[in-house]
Length: 319
Image (tube, rainbow, N blue to C red; front, side, top):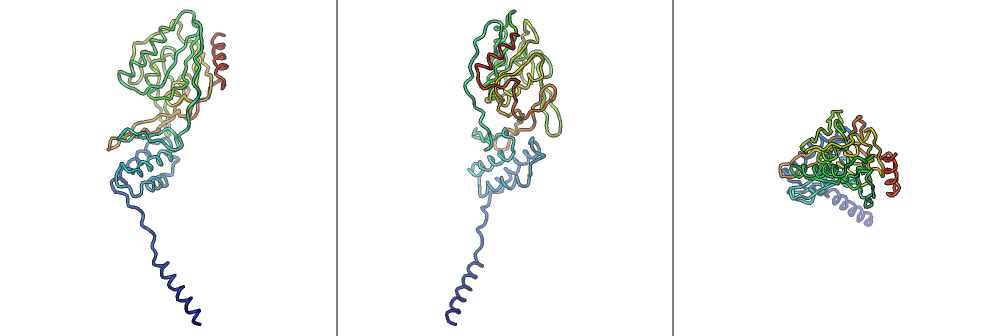
């Protein structure tokens, strides 16, 4: 009996100890910091391209958990929370620039690199224009567009049978000076649309040297409405993809190379109180027929070997 009593006493003490143990309280986040994140989430919820398919209650919970215990906006936990939000947006294109100029990306951001493009050796019958990535605005944008048009003018001659527009390696930036620059080859009028989840459309194109925010002295080709071969690869992204889409469904146009990166969506900037900026994906790109992309743009002729598809493009232009 004494043995049983002893073990009964130990069992009773164990129950009392377990019963008195309480879980550790959740780290308390500074109310101002939590309010900052909730404001960021509200912008995403109101404007994200995926706003209709995201579980926002779960989204908010996941983000705030990452920030648990943070006392300032500069806390590393806030960085983790913003990265979580960008990942859970599921668009692979949105990004955040904090007030120190540091870029934050979602963890689902893909790899959009590719081999160094080979520049084709051409005769006078084929015009060639390379459009590289560009992120400037204002006078810089006008200068960038003018440089492209000046190159087109210097290359243009009466023997040209067609043009190669090389978008390989164009990782994006500001699409408008790119569009203004390539205008003489692309041609006048509507070239594409941005279409949001509600079906609202924003039309864009080239008009006599002018696009949104960019204006140049326009050049006119000696032979308007030419045949055009567009070159793309996996490193063609974002605004680079916009220019590729501008040539889709255009008469006398074919595309060659590899599928693009898959960021054929449009971002809109939203400023936050601390000077940070959210670049949020808000709509899909569509071509002049309103065919919606949003993912990779697949060329008409898919070929990994650069020498082969360059020759295919040249042969087609000379037919």
